[in-house]
Each structure stands twice: as structure tokens, then as C-alpha cells.
Length: 262
Length: 287
Image (cartoon, rainbow over all chains, first blue to last red; front, side, top):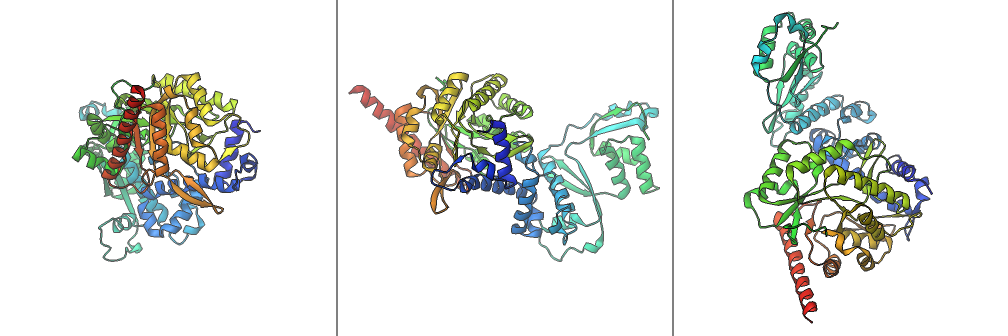
């Protein structure tokens, strides 16, 4: 008789990895094949979690058709089951999974569409935080400015893709008439997704602005972010870049780091 | 007694997202509502709408994510989020399940079956004790619907529940549909199950529909909460009322969710049966 911990480990393997034999030995048949009894649990887990992924990734689901989506979701769930019970938070790893899923090779833009959908899903879950009092930033000694790091709006996601994923996404919104197919040849896009009240906004950014904000979101200092923005475009206007951070309430706190970093 | 002062022994409904707007717009006369706390832990618009509901109706929190039967530790972050939501909503009842869902780092989205052994008893009792300590209140434990049982179980499920009550002071949420489904699937006697539950611990009853699936040419009942309460479950509910007296009763519906009015109709049937059972009790006392 296995200890409870061992039984639960075996049970999980039987549900997700199909390794049933060890658990089958422990189940009373009561007139039925124990495999049929286990299958009831497996079916529920896979169908409910597939529905969770479908609701977070509706455009991916429409792009590949529902049966293929269910096939990909099945493989994803078995490899990456949820870590906790709040299922609105489940599925962050799905875009990376799709990128490595050989059956998706014919749709190279699919992982980036999925990343955009996750950003939108995340923004809808995370309301915009309280904006910072502008006076606090003005009180910083100018000499300390390059060493500032920012806590960005928690609903914010930044996303760069070599594909026009915003056009693909918009073309598949309910009610949005797909007047002509999306031309993949128009090239990539830099996007900013964030909560605005109870809705979610989607903006395209200039490459330099994207580089600037993306660096700050990754926790780099203002000095480092400015260098990256200037590398992206030599005429990037830093004053305007900072002004926009304030006007658009893109961050809700900042700290002065001790070192400027490399 | 688990039953709360001022909390009505009448039938409420499980509140699901598609009904929230209609409920707030029409304010139907339903004595209480129940929600899954996991759906509101992210805050945002969902929590704001729940707070509007809370202003008008008594609310119960019915958790599905604590995994009280896990051999490992209780997810502390989840418990803290439950406590925060509880403090904000001030529910009239808090309940969870006799089951497990988490093992290692994986949360398997189902109420999975436990072997009923002394080891499981001590694991679940320890976790209930911990949860009640953190929440600062008694919780109700619901009997699961089962599709299998383990060979090495040594305790019957109702006795297992009764022992949890004795060890932890928790109450019980008697899901009458689950008793019916489990009894059918495992070849048990549903009435005998009901008779073995400790009367004084019953703080709430659940009712729901189930589906019948074919497993190897034999019907197996699936607790899918996707249809009206079945006739034999209403009958078992009447037996439960005769044994427990009127108890706050809840109609659950989670798949193929119908119009709000359909759920309210099911609640009216439950209220009718509760009134009839109360009259039967009065007559018996008078005779």
C-alpha cells in the first residue's frame, strides 16, 4: 500500500503522462475497468483546462481551428499543468510552447499572436495601478536621474514582433469584418498593451520609444534605457520620452539605484 | 451546531459570471448566493462586481483550490488570498472539499479522490485545523463525487467525514447529488450513507444535476452540474431534510448554464420541499 504522497505522485503521472499501471493496481474495479474510472478524471482535467486556454487565446484558436487548438492544448497541459488554483493566471507559457511545437511550423506568426493575447489577458486581470505624484520625480537631483529605475504599471506589456500581429489580432475580433486578408509582408510592429479603466488599450510604438520603455520595464536604469533608445534611433528625444512616461502614467514608483550599472 | 444565526435555512443559487449583470439589474428575491473564491482573487472588475452583489445579498464562499487532502503542505499564498477575500466579503459560510488537487508543483484542476486511511485522516484533519486557524472561523467540508475507490481504504466516507468533525470541529456540507453519484458509481447505498452522517454537523446542502455516460457498456454518472436536479436526487434530498431538518440549500449549475430564472425555479422547488419537510416534522411532533 503506497503512502499518500507516493499515491498522489503516481496518480498525477497516470493522468498527465499516461503511466497508469502502478495506479491501476490500487483501484477497486467494482465491475468496471479501472482505466475507464481514471479516464473520467483525465477527461475533466483536460477539457476544463483547454477551455481556460481557449478563453485566454481566442484568436489563436480561430487561426488554427478548434480541433488543432485542442490537440496543442492537450500536449501543453500535460507538460505544463497549472501551478495554482487561480486559473485566470494559467497559460503564460503557452506562446513559448507553441514556438517549439513542430505542428505549428506552418504558422510562424502564431507564437507572437499568442504573446499579444496573453498581454491583453494579463492587462484585463491587472487593473492600472495608482499613478505617481509628478512632484516626487521633479524633486530628484538631476545628477541622480541616470540612476533611476522604475516600477512600471503592472498591467503593462511590451511586445515586438517581425509579424503584423496587431493587424492579425484586429482582423479576428468579433464584429470586425475581415475585408481583405492581412498582408504578412507589411512587416513587424512594436506594441504596448495596458489596462485603461475596465478596458485594455493596444498602441503601436516607434522602435526607439519601444526600446526605451522595454529597457525600463526590464528594470534597467534611465541612463541605460536612454542609451538603448539612442542606439535604436540617433534622434530619440529623451526629455520627451520622460515627459510621456509621466503623462501616460506608465510607472507608479521609482528608486535611485546605487550604481549606474554597465 | 454549525448553522449560523440569522442565516436562512432556505435555498440559494450558485452565482456564475453570466448571471451577475442580470442579478444586479433585476435584484431577484433569492435569500443567498454562493461563489468560488478562486474566480475573484485576481481583483479587478470581477471583485468589484462581487462587492456590488455583496451589498444586496448574503454570500457564501465555496473553495475548490485548497487541496486539503494533499500529502504536502497547503499552498500558503492561496490560503492568504482566501483570507484576504474573506475579510473583504465577510461571507456567511466558507466551505471546501474532501479531496486533493495539488501534488508537487502541479495543480490538477479536479477534486481528486483520497484513500480513506488513518494516514489520510491525519493529513486532512491537520490541514483543516491549519486553515481554520488562519481564517479564524469554522469551515464546512463537502463530500466529493467519486468515480473510483482505492483498495487500501479502511474507512467508509461518511465515517471519515464524521471523524474530521470530531477532530477539527469543522462542519459538513452535504452534497446530496454527490452522494447519489458516488453511490451509483461505486455500488454503495445512498440512504445508508446519509444515515451515517452526523446530523449536528450539517451546515449546508448542495444540489445539482448530473449526466450519464457510457463506460465500457455500463452507465457511469458524471457530476457535471449541467442539468436540472434529477428526480432520484430530489427524493434523496427529502430523506436528507427528514434527517437534518431544514438546512441552507444551494443549487449549483456550471456547464451549459441556463437563464437565471431556471436556477431560481430550482431553488423554489427546494424551498417547497423544505416547507413540506418542516410541516411533516410538526405533524410528527404533534402526533
